[in-house]
Figure 1: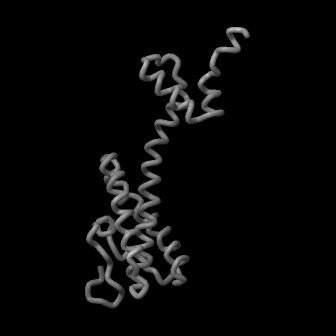
Figure 2: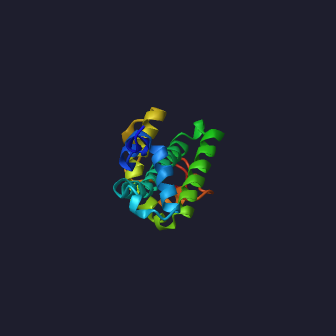
Figure 3: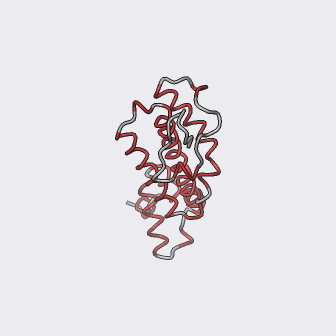
Amino acid sequence: MTRAALKPPPAADLYDRDFYAWTQAQAELLRAGRFDELDLRNLIDEVASVGGSEKREIESRLDILLAHLLKWKFQPGARTSSWQATLREQRMRIGRVLKSSPSLKRYPAEVFSECYLSARLEAAKETGIDFSLFPEKPPFTVEQALDPNYFPKEPGLLDQS
């Protein structure tokens, strides 16, 4: 066998064939200080995408949280402990992302309106309530939505939180 046959494939080829193996190879090169051997093009893209995944997680969990808050508010007779557990879980998970990435602290407020629209659509689908019957503007703030002690009151009560 020739030396060329024993040589490992270029990093970019490994990136396309086995992503996990590529990540481990890049980590080893970084640990060893062999920076000139890094697959910089793909490494830059992957590092940038890590931050994007944190944002996507916040958006996804906020979508679920807001849909459940709408269901809680507009279907008081159907409230279950599982809805309450979902509210707790989504708030906790968003909190964890924000704790590990404090620079995203304002991000939930930035995407709140967009997530609320998704939540209206999801709540309508899950409840059978017509989409147009959910308020166009959120009946709660982002601060309330993320507050572990906040549970909206049903329509018609004095406290319209």
